[in-house]
Image (cartoon, rainbow, N blue to C red; front, side):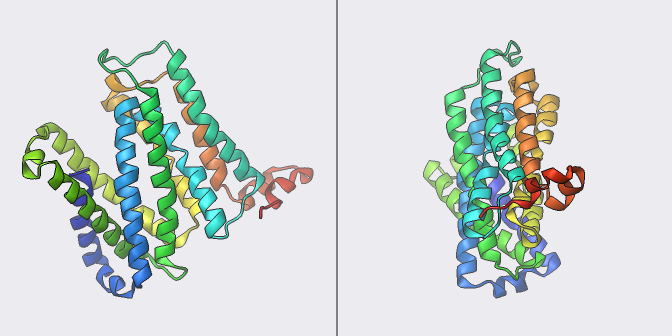
Length: 290
């Protein structure tokens, strides 16, 4: 976090310079600045710390379905505060997303395939705890971003908001680094690890820039489930780069697949599903709550 979070600030500064984001900063209201700063601290500090701790305890693959819980959290907040609606299809997706982590963790306990590195043993309780912290952080931040952008928020406004979010998070992280020992702490980090974290910071910046822009043009209930498709790439790259520390049993992969199907069900629109259903099943897409 000491590398990936502050690195996002100059990258967002560059994006704002290229696309006119500095003018958009002047258009943000006081409450907009506050909402964006809150989103940054919640997502990039609390959520990301939970993410790293969950992956440290479980490996990236096994942590994935637990972190998918951010989808129903985001959906619930959108229903309550943004007047979005719940359909039977989305309710089914919610159930599947909740079921996926249970299947994956059960598979890890009973699975015969262990990580190749015998020194690494998944710590399920710790991973579940930090995975839940990650899910709360990642699931609640879209609401704050939408509040900060407002109904008239544009793509350029979203880049300005991303800069505010990253800057607020960077302030918190830098303070934590100073408490931990400042430059001496940074020098203690492994040189190879620093290179990987720097590369991660660049890719995370790209991800977040597109995420903020997506939230400027689409509802939370569409953007968040699509973003969680990243679990597919997490499994692929975990197998390619870090298989010695990953639990890749069939049941764990099944849990990931279940939560992924649930995330997709949460985002599919009624217009897509309706033509595929018999006439007497139309209530599945027509019924809405509230």
